[in-house]
Structures are given as structure tokens and as C-alpha cells.
Figure 1 (tube, helix red, strand yellow):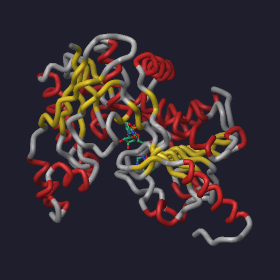
Figure 2 (cartoon, helix red, strand yellow):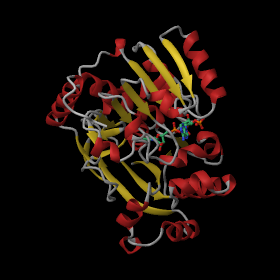
Figure 3 (spheres, rainbow, N blue to C red):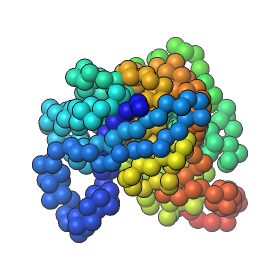
Figure 4 (spheres, rainbow, N blue to C red):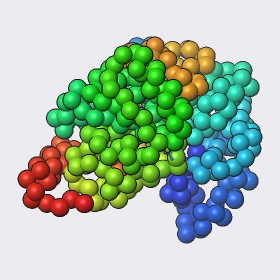
Length: 365
Ligand SMILES: NC(=O)c1ccc[n+]([C@@H]2O[C@H](COP(=O)([O-])OP(=O)(O)OC[C@H]3O[C@@H](n4cnc5c(N)ncnc54)[C@H](OP(=O)(O)O)[C@@H]3O)[C@@H](O)[C@H]2O)c1
């Protein structure tokens, strides 16, 4: 039996209430204080993953690191690091031979490198397979909307991050113009120079979010902002958005007020076998996040080594994990948004709203 561990954390109050219903109605400040005192704990045992290529059985523990995204961003860095490290050590003591760092746990300690140095087993953020899933979802959504990427303006928000940087480099090979958006101009400049040197498309940088996405036909967003930074009134009619961030970068109001915009989640995977997570993280049966799936794939392969760590992910590893995922029968789920499948009816509705808008028949904003 090969064993993995995977660190998770609540993405917001709705997750806290799902796991601890008596938290309902409590103030976030109080809940945060309680989470602060709680040590990491075993949340569930994951069983039933079945590769189509090998007979190796695997199982794994989900370990909760009880912290909300805001706490990762605002608490003392050393304190956050120590708490994540305790979670990773707990996974190791449960027998994990590879430990995946989910959500914001992968952003501490030089994007996982310092955690890996303190463990005796392999560590990954799962970000290489997240890039694969995000690119597949983006391309599928653009195709569904009949968008020709070679003529499109594409923006990547969180472009200098672990996921954003590789997505930017991959997109630069197939789009007309790329707008790189994040807060630090100097890091954006460095990335833009790298993409220029690779000689692909026209590239601009912007540290003003609204300006950086205003002309975009397609947006891939993967920030660690704490969520809800992309507002309905910043978006061009007809834009396709792939939201990889957790919590999501796109405000909930977009679904309600912008029927002319297609938002899809990037990073949802169908897991092969009769997998039981024994834990409700809000996805349909047998579906997981790409970062969880990467950890499972490495466990199936017996690759108990450090894999996706740091902000400079390699294109080779992205290609390799894509190949390994196919070999074992993992695949990107159909398009999803707001906890449900994006149906062909929904896509037709968005297209018709765009047509109406072009003919001046409706006021969308
Ligand atoms: N769906 C999945 O399976 C999956 C898997 C793994 C991760 N994720 C999610 O993907 C996201 C990115 O992860 P990562 O590891 O790539 O993070 P990361 O390396 O920390 O990168 C975050 C990026 O966001 C930018 N950023 C942060 N706050 C911003 C703001 N307010 N406005 C604009 N840009 C901002 C950062 O640059 P500046 O600091 O310069 O702004 C950086 O470019 C996270 O939300 C994570 O939870 C999803």
C-alpha cells in the first residue's frame, strides 16, 4: 500500500459551518480565534483510488490545518509556517510517503521548499497538475464560446505566482496579446522579459487590476488575494474567465448580474476508481482538486520525492504530470462554476446575451 497525506483548510465561514454546524451564526472574528488555538488534525481517510495502469493500492489522510485564508495572509509568518509544518509532520506520522500542500498551505516557506526541508518524505504543492487543469478548462471554455485565441487579448491575474507564471508562459504561445497582472511591478517586469525572450506574443504588464483586465477577451485568474477581487463592472461583455483561485477571485455578483460573461473553475478533476474522500469539500462524488490529484498520482507512481515546489515551476514537470495523469485515468472534469456543471444551455444563453448586447438590445451593466 502506498500512502499519501494532503493538507486542507477551510476557505471561508461556509466551510467551517459545513464541518462544525454549531459555528453557524458565530462572528468570523470569534471563529478565527478558536481556529487559531486548534492544532492540525486528521480529517479523513481517502480510499478507493484505482489506477487503470497499475495495481498498486493507495490510501491517504486529509489533514486539516485549521486556519482561514485571511489568517494565512495576516498572521505572523513564522507562526503560520510552524502550524503548517505541524500539519505536514502529522501527515508524515500517519504514514504518508508523499505530502501534498493544499490551498494556502503551499504558499508558506518559499512556496513549500522550507516545509520539504523539514520532512523525511516527498512534498508537493500539486501546482503542476493545477496548471494542466487550468489550461484545459480555459481552452475548453474559449472553444465553447467560439473564441479564437490567436486573435484574443488574454489577461493572467496573479501572473507572477507559481501557477500564474507557467500559465502565462504557456498562453504566450497561442494568444495574440497577453496582459500580466499582479501587485508587484518589478516581478511582473521580470516575467515579461522572460516571455519576450521566449519570443512569443505581445506582452504588457499592469499592477492595476481593473486596467489590466478591461480589454481582455479571456482571463485566467490565480491570485492569493483572499478572494472576490474581480468585480462585475470591470469586465468586457463576452469575456471568458477561468478562476483557479481558492477562495475564488471572481465576485459572486458576476454570476447574478453579468449573464454575458462565462466563468468556469479551473482545477477540477475526475479521479479514477470508487474513491471515497469521507469528507465533503463541496464537489460531486469522485471529483477532486487538481492539487489533490497530483499527490495521488505521485503516490500511484511511487514517486516519493519533492515535486512541484517554489514559484518557478518547470514546464517539463507540467508536461510529465499531464502524461502520468492520463496513464492512470485522471482527467479534467467538464466545465463547472458556482458548484454546478456549466451546461451547453448555459453557454448558448451567454452567447445569445452577447449577440443581444452587440445589437444594442439589452443593457447588461
Ligand atoms: N484549483 C486548484 O486545484 C488549486 C490548486 C492549487 C492552488 N490553487 C489556488 O491558486 C491560487 C494561486 O496559487 P499559487 O500557489 O500560484 O500562489 P502564489 O505563488 O502565492 O501566487 C499568487 C499570485 O497572486 C498575486 N496576487 C496576490 N494578491 C493579489 C491581488 N490582491 N491582486 C492581484 N494579484 C495578487 C501575487 O503577486 P503579488 O504579490 O505581486 O500581487 C502572485 O502573482 C491560490 O488561490 C490557490 O489557493 C488552486
